[in-house]
Amino acid sequence: MVRVEFLGPIQKAPLELEITNLSELADILQKESELSEWLENSAVAVNDMLVGTLDVVLKDGDKVSLLPPVCGG
Amino acid sequence: MLYLYDGALEVPKILEDWYVQETKSNYGAYIPFVGTVREEDGIDGLSFDIYEPILESWFKAWQEKAQLQGAIIKMAHSRGNVMLHESSYIAAVFSPKRRVALEFIDAFVEDFKASAPIWKYDLKGGERIYALTRSTPIQGSGILGEQK
Image (cartoon, rainbow over all chains, first blue to last red; front, side):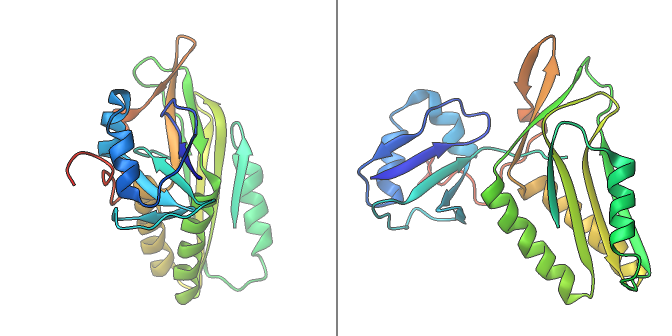
């Protein structure tokens, strides 16, 4: 299972999904209309490393995080 | 070093602690930046969420950049609520020469604003409202969206 976490202001509980890459995750999350804006403006990290492409293989125990726009300070 | 605190920062104490920590380190320049919550748009204060694992790796990369120039960087940030005229953020660079520190603090704070995984909320009338319009998408955002 891959755990998917929604950080900061995205008010959504974590998901546990049977997926093997980020493209599959994109397909699943795009079906949730309340997430559509967040998918367009959020960065993605796999095991706490930011990634810039969907071409990432996922394995059992991996963690995917969605990071919406930031504003520290 | 990265320091995270619950609530407002004790600015004089932190600045003094950092000064004392490096008194004998032979740095010629200590340049701090302090961010304070201003009265604006009727807010009562600000509130912050932090995702620490990625903040730590982001900060470590900046520490390594500083080290290449013989400098060090320290940063303090608040978690949770920080009210008007209190401070939520301090960054400081110590370096042998002032020019390195002045340039470094500018680059560091700009990247902090654009990349550090911290989310800001306005506290207004008892509500905690995400400051979306003042926030910046992290570089590479949007890959899970429709435009594949």
